[in-house]
Image (cartoon, rainbow, N blue to C red; front, side):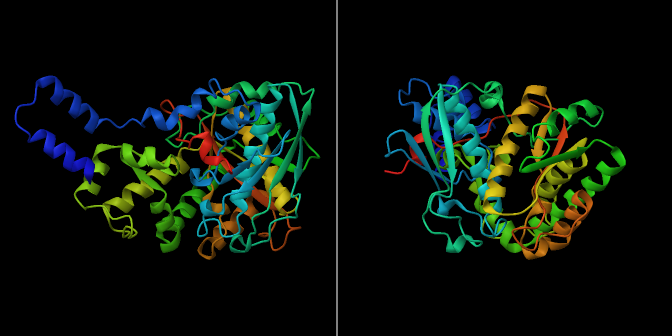
Length: 394
């Protein structure tokens, strides 16, 4: 609201030179994400500490809803200890913390790669004080991983893609198919016999079935009050909010900013299904789902916390590989969410992709990630990230 008052005050403040008016109009009407919110994508700069340099790369890791739920402890020499920031979990869309642990796996993989780039070998010990329990509300403050550092690491070829990696959320080009060779290049990232299995399809009859599943699951997420409100709580609108939070969903378009300034958009109340706001939101999800030109998915033989972390490590490598190959890879997380209203779609995804029922215990085969493939219709912007210091434990 301060933004609107300042805008009105400036416009009504008497004589304003033409150049000033133009500059003000440009500020108000632009839809770019503030550059300061994206500075992490420029690399660690002159940071001297090799561990902090590595963390600066690791925090570009993808996470569900861009929640960035990591805390890093560097107080022990020659080690990095990773914790979960329990204040940044998503209890409605991710009630068991599975997606959060996938995000920790992605962070660990980028951290290992960034250390290796500096010749530092990281020995990763998961759960040095035991695994986290099944429900996040019972999670104690214990480490997810401890990385013991030594010399002698070789660089990872995929590291070159870390700062180029983007998550495309716009429409894909439906006139441009994804080749079977491209698909094979992505699924090969998870080697056969390893802890994570990867598969995919570019067969259009099968793709159409999965498109429909993703669109229907997205509707469930935005009509269910708890998950709809959680999405709204993660919405950052306008440069001030984006810079203050540097997480969640960033929107800087003038129409939405003006609607909020005029009190016409309430983030405390989910939009009714017959409203224009709901229809516009659902149209975004439909465009994402129905322009998928293929799908890839990652699964594990069980669903332990260790399995979830392993899936995250494989997932970020798959995204880096997609970046290298020049194809877009975008998670369609809704069918795999585990809140009650999503149960039919969760079961359908496991049936369609694994030929199995939904997981009932930590030894059940589990779909961990499901992503659409395609070629974006426009350049893909980077997503905001918090500053490295924000992730550090004192």
